Amino acid sequence: MVRAQGPGRMITVHGFSPSGNCHKVKLLLEQLGREYAWVETDSARGATRTPEYLARNPNGKVPMLELDDGRVLVESNAILCWLADGTKFLPSDPWQKAQALSWMFFEQYSHEPYVAVARFICGWTPADSPRRADLPKLRERGHAALAVMEKHLASNPWFSGDAYGIADIALYAYTCVAPHGGIALDAYPALRGWLARVEATPGFVPLPAPDAQAQALIDQST
Amino acid sequence: MVRAQGPGRMITVHGFSPSGNCHKVKLLLEQLGREYAWVETDSARGATRTPEYLARNPNGKVPMLELDDGRVLVESNAILCWLADGTKFLPSDPWQKAQALSWMFFEQYSHEPYVAVARFICGWTPADSPRRADLPKLRERGHAALAVMEKHLASNPWFSGDAYGIADIALYAYTCVAPHGGIALDAYPALRGWLARVEATPGFVPLPAPDAQAQALIDQST
Image (cartoon, rainbow over the protein chains, first blue to last red):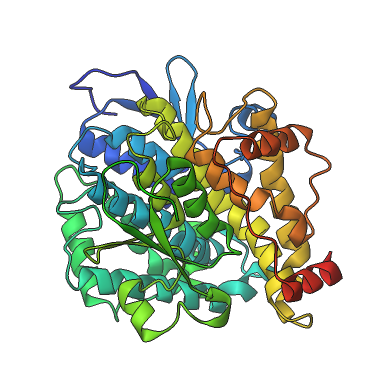
C-alpha cells in the first residue's frame, strides 16, 4: 500500500497475487502512486465462488475493484481504463486511445485465453488433470499471439501509443510468464526488448514468483 | 451507406455480414448516421488469411475499420469505442464509461467465445466437423454468460449506464442469435425484454439472416 498523493476514493482490490490479470491492477496502482488495500482472494481454491463474492460479482472472477462506498468494477482491463483516465498511461488522442483499447481487447481475446490458461494449467492444476490435453493447442495459439505482438514491436516501442501505458501493462502481465506455460520467448527478440523496457519503467513491480507447489508443477510440465 | 451529416474521415469497414462482431460496427454507424463503405470479407472462406489482408491486420480477423488515409483500427469493441467517443452512445462519466467497458470486456472474454463460437460451429462448419464435439461445453458456458446478463437486467435497463449505448450493441450482436448455436433464451425473460428494447432504438438494423446453406446446417444442429 502506498500513501495517496492526489484526490480520489479509497480503493480495495480483491485479487489473487499469482494472477496476471490481478497484477495488472497492482502494477498500475503502484505506478500511479495511488493508495489501495489488497484483499487476497484465492480464485484457484474457490474464493470467487462463495455466495458473498458472487453477490458482488456474478461472473465470479478476480480482480474486483471496490470503492469505499461499496460500488464495484470488474474486468481487469476496464479497471485499468478507469484508473488511467486522464493520466499519461492512456493517450488522450481518440485514435491513439482506440489503438490502445484495440490491443487490450486483443489481449483478452487472442492472448490471455492461450498464454495465461496454458500457465494456469501447468502450475495450478494437478499433474494428472485432463485439462493438460489442451496444452499443445493452447501453446500453438499462444505463439500466434506473440507473433502478432512481435510484428508490432518491430516498428513500435509500445502498445499504448507513443509512450508506455495500460495496453503495455495488460499485455505484459502474462507475456512475462509465458514460459511457465511452456511457451518460450526465444523466437521473439523485439518482444523480449519490450519486456525489459516495461521492467525499467518507474515504479515497476514484478509479478510474484509462483509458490513452491506451483513451481514444482511448472517444472514437471515444461 | 448513409450520407454523412457531420465532419470526419471517410470510413471503410471490412466485414463479414453474418458476423455479429462485424454487425456491431454496422449497427453503430447506422445509428450515428455516419457515411461508410462496406467491403464484404468472407472470413469463413479465408478472406482474412490472404497476404494482403494479413499485412494490414496481422491477427487476421474482421471487422477492420480503414480511414481514407490508410490507417486501420481492429477489434470490434475498440472500433465501437472510437466511433462512440463524444457521443451519447458512450457515457462521459468516467465510472459509467468504465462500467460500459467492463461489459464489453465481459462480452469478448466470457460471452462471445461460447455464444458466438457455438453459433459458428452450428452454421458455418461441415455437419461432420470434429469441432461439434465442443458444443455441449460451449453451450454450458454460453448459458452461464446469459445468466450473468439476466441478473444485471433484473435491475438495470441497459449495459451502457442510464441509456442504450455501445455495451448494449456489443452484447446484443451475438445474444440475439444465441439460438443458432443451440442456446435457447426461454429461461431469460429480462434478457428477452432488453433484446426487444435494443431492436426498438432509432436506426436499428437487424443482423442479416443466415444464407440457405448456413440455415440448413443450423436446423440440423439445434
